Image 1 (spheres, rainbow, N blue to C red):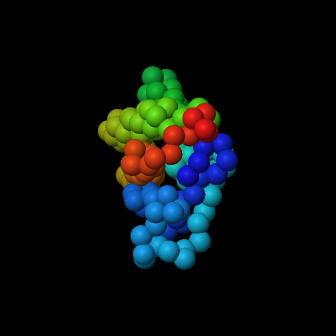
Image 2 (image 1 turned 90 degrees about the vertical axis):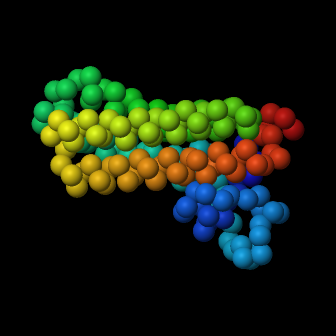
Length: 163
């Protein structure tokens, strides 16, 4: 995995976001699998999920009484947008430690969205089905970010600015 040029992730591991390994470090059951790569933050699955979550948060917070609760509406929107933004900013910083720091902030923002969804359902702004769907998406986004953080912490890669 390299900043600014190429990141390599096993497409199988990319789904769970848990055990990412460097291409040369693949254990025996992953050898021969096709590797997915990303060269921009838009290619990162966690960013893609965060974008989907943000679209859905904006849609639900535009309707009914939710749209008139300006405090909660604005806060949940900022938290969901923060996930995307911090993944992008951390990636473009080109340093592993900085990327991890921004990923940790993004993961915290995913937790914030989950908490705010409880407020939204408690106030009857959203129904149980919407809550469950968005909560699961926020949780999945957080897990993907956590997997990337774990990979980077165990990686010897420093990032493009340290080359």
